[in-house]
Image (cartoon, rainbow, N blue to C red):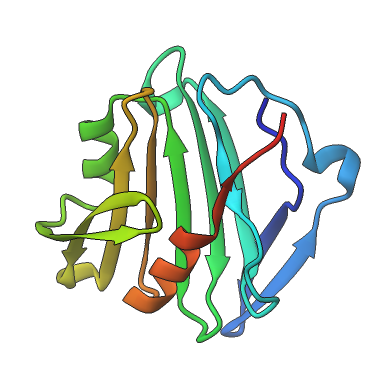
Length: 158
């Protein structure tokens, strides 16, 4: 089951991000995820959640579950966690804006593919699991911040 432990919406107003908490009964709507969903755990409080969206079906096709979690990094840049059971190549292409591949990086026991789209100031890290799900960490956050976010990912308990 996909369960949100923290959900928030962010609004841009006069160049400031306003974080609005969603009350718990509405934040943790259980949705069956056909993959082991992951979420950040242990990030410092300077990382702020600014958006969350769960899509069943939609652009990724019938039978897919896709979760987006947007975060503001400590320096004010943006990063997001995107995960799905959709077809990996197409999903990665969309989430990374078809950024060209860079040398992969290894965090803990996971090898992440890496790409950059300089025209959009976008950096991305991603992996496709043999179990049929894909995780993408992307945004205009620094490489160090994206690695910190990726390293914080832990399976959600059902």
